[in-house]
Every structure is written in C-alpha cells, then in structure tokens.
Length: 108
Image (cartoon, rainbow, N blue to C red):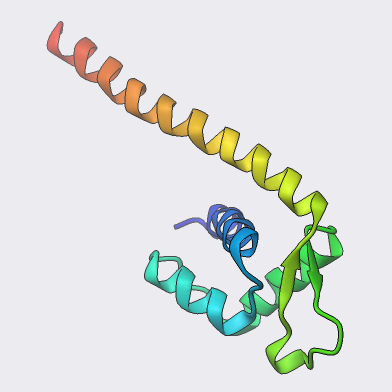
C-alpha cells in the first residue's frame, strides 16, 4: 500500500480509537496491525506526536514518553466527524461505482 494512503488511513483509525478511550503507541500499533496496516513503533509514535501538534490529540499530563497516553480533543472530534463523512461517501462511491462498471461491462 502507498505510504501516504497508509498514514492517512492510520490517522483516521487513531481518531476513531481515541474517541472511545485514551490511546498509546503499543495499543495503536497492535490495532493497526490487526487491520493490516503495518507501521513501525517509531512511525506510530511520530504519528501520535504529529496528531498532537495538529491539536487533534492531547497527551495526558504526567505520562512518561514510553507509555504516553493521548486523549481526543474537541478539534480531533470535529476532524473525526469530517473523516466519517468522507469515508461514508467513499464507501457509497466504491459500491455504486462497482455496480456502474458491471452494468457497462455487460452492455459491451
């Protein structure tokens, strides 16, 4: 899978996971791997830090770097709403696009 797409998909999953419970590197790493998104632990840490810099996540105070927990922020929650809308639209497009392609293939 293209690295850029892999990272965007991973960010969407992190927002979703963080909407339920605090997240941390090893937890995210395991969840993403179960979904077939294989990132290194270094990449996951960098991803979480980048999402915190964007204001989507906030590190819990007092956590040491080795197991820093992140919480979803209001900005992150708004981003998740937008992501859900895009994913729902994409899901519809893919489903109907496939049907549309099959219909045209049958008429050739």
